[in-house]
Image 1 (cartoon, rainbow, N blue to C red):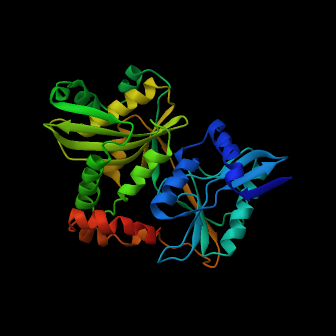
Image 2 (cartoon, rainbow, N blue to C red):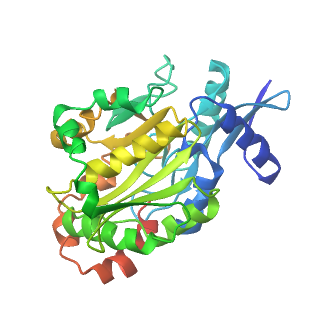
Image 3 (cartoon, rainbow, N blue to C red):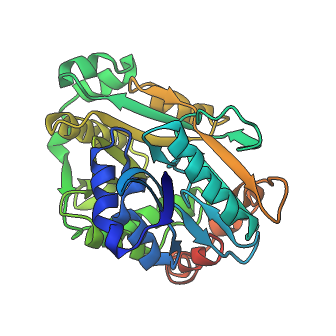
Length: 348
């Protein structure tokens, strides 16, 4: 008989052991990731563990959120990264979904996200599904020369001009000593240029604190003692995840390309199987074209909506407030850092 329960301290070790050995596990399944989100934003962790004869046969990350708008609800991943259940068999998946449905009935709704379509044919189990952003992944199970040959012609041309590295220094931070430099650049690019609310600095600090050394890494590019690019990455299981980027435009030195190529080389050299370049909106043709140029494969993740007190899915909050981008981009950095970023917790 399959029993599904909420993870507790007694099950932490068994939960983690299952995630470690599962071939499809990603950073979002880790308890360290969940605890960093809880520490930074106060999100309640209600991860599920499926047991059969006391053996773990499946898990599912699950967060309980109480935003100001939208009502209390459950979600397997609080941000647009498609993390969902891991399971050994269809009965295990069904048992996990049944528990999520029962929880959703007492809340507004639940969302189950997945990097690929879940093998559920019964429309009653998951009645609503959206195909949202694309995910781009690069295979690393070959040598870097072969990987280089899969790149677009323009990227090869840029990376062959190694004289750019005579002036530009590439730094790899594995213990968080460059968080402040990363964060300053991140706020200026993410909020000042694009008009998005950046995460609070505390999230990045907690990721370094919760994960073992080397799991969270910041890749930085410095030119004439000034940082012109930085990328926050997570190295878990068989995948390197390119989570957050902050790069100034520099057509002479191309810091974006050099930082990405450095990450790819390091990941391949350390035996990782995948470099995940993250999500990109379907309609964002420029970003999609950029990521395709790295020889990536495309996944079409899904968001499954499970009705609760709210019977039908609505447009996600961050898809409804595009008008706010122009306001955010005009705010001073100190206001964004001290007031706007910490306020994310009230909208999750």
